[in-house]
Image 1 (cartoon, one colour):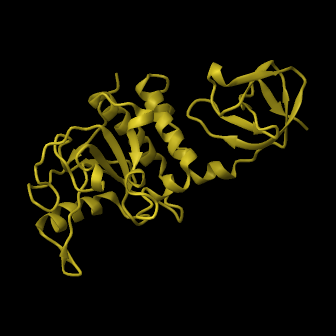
Image 2 (cartoon, helix red, strand yellow):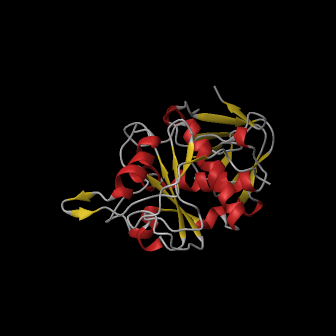
Image 3 (cartoon, one colour):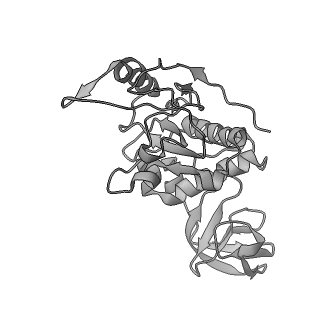
Length: 262
């Protein structure tokens, strides 16, 4: 069982602009981003609770906006609205989605290590608490409204493989396959600049896979001791990373099985 992550309660007052009090039956968890990199999450909390909730007009029209949770750059999780009530964040999914606004950093709007860890912890716990499937029931705002309307959260929409890894991390945590301390931020930019060996040599027989996972269903053959392969990419995982080979197959990056060749 996953323990609930630390949450700072900043309850929004009942109001028609952000917290109407309408009941919510949670079927999805929708990830959002706050819209501008390197803006602290507490500022988003203040905007929702102290500006929008009091009635705020833009171009003569009131803004209707809120979120159940906001995650800050330092990993702090704020809760503004109970998960038993709707918020105004996910358009047509407002009636069934728990919304999480997440602060981002850098020109690509990725996540800090602390933010990412809190994202995984909160979403895995919410899936456990609400009886949801981490792989199927965690969505992006864009999944609801489409790319033509909005790219949100922009990093995950532009990097769908990272969204898939994020959901896998949540699933693994919920399933007890990893611990909170084992969570690795797959969006950290230093990971994309990690030196990838051009050639690897197999030092212990190991499986090939046709997908970047270790499922028995993806096994397509066995790499034998002494064989050498060309590496074209690396896939960062929360457990063990994998190399993508020139053949298109995947193999573990564990030094127990392969090593850099020359």
